Image 1 (cartoon, rainbow, N blue to C red):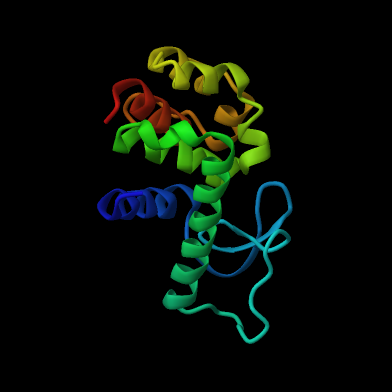
Image 2: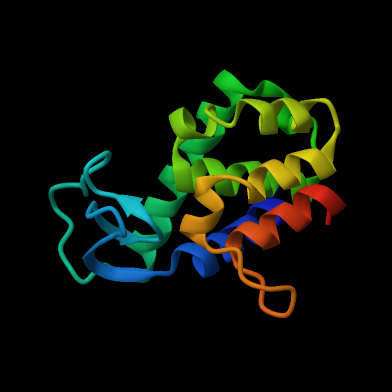
Length: 155
């Protein structure tokens, strides 16, 4: 991903996931830290201790994004053909859901790949994921509505 686009993605993930320097349980009871870093899937290096430093939080996020890009490249290589905003949408969703659950969005992903972005956005909003991460309102859009609008409009 292009460097400036990745910086924008990092800002969006920090907003959407929050930033924590200690362990907390996410909405599904999974131990988490940093910017949505799943400790079950990827424990901290042995020498690290809480509270985490800003550098450690940044390192975890960098590792997690490398994993997201690799998962997307392996399973949905066409994601890199998207414009920057749509690249961030699919990365944000993969970061939040994981590749296995993202791949369950069969019709939405097909619409994305075919350039039917309004259909893809509607599929995103009609999902259980949207109600979990928050739809919000036009005046105060939640994560799902923000990402759906970005997918539809490409900005």
